[in-house]
View 1 (cartoon, rainbow, N blue to C red):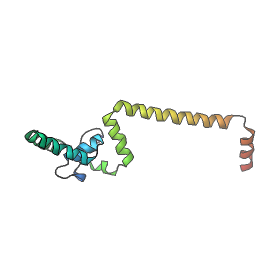
View 2 (view 1 turned 180 degrees about the horizontal axis):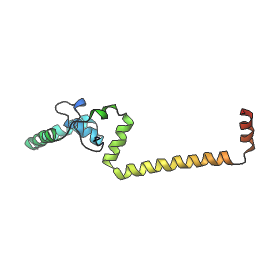
View 3 (view 1 turned 180 degrees about the vertical axis):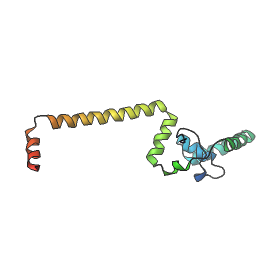
View 4 (view 1 turned 135 degrees about the vertical axis):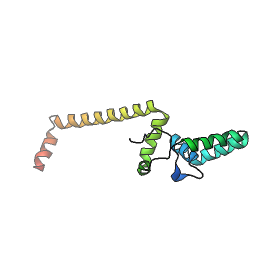
Length: 127
């Protein structure tokens, strides 16, 4: 079975301890340093035992990030982070891109199929 790109995984490749903060950063698209600082501040401000318990529970329960995800480009990672954060918006963006491509192809078809004598001369000159 293929790994799901919308699931939370521990990121052991960029980890400091067990990869929880790095996994959260990868999942949400927030910078990993901000996630780590946020966890430390939350722990120091008053969530001392609970943040550590939650951290170790997540480290124990979550799966490691599959190695097949390590070859993704930065553009692919950003796309999947958007899908996880706002699935409706990402579908809307993809539809918009396809509509734009379809419109551009229609413009090309219209240009090529019209009675454009200059274009016809250029095509005949290429033959």
